[in-house]
Length: 75
Image 1 (cartoon, rainbow, N blue to C red):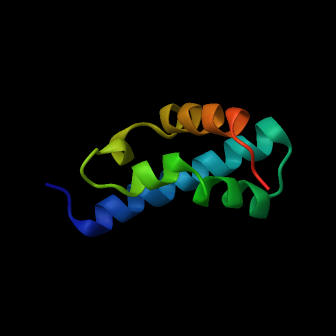
Image 2: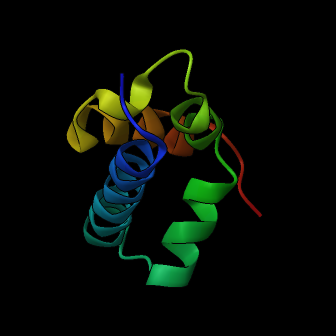
């Protein structure tokens, strides 16, 4: 069983890597990339401890986010 600090670290690491990937793939600045992440369904799923998406690799999680980003409308 993971302690809260470990879970928080994994989530922060995923957010950090997804931010880098968005910036590289879509030429977004950091603020815009974080806005995409924090307003996504994927981020909600990563935060949900029950489904354990936070233990997946950042690149796997990013592929889910990228699919959501490309098919959704962001303001």
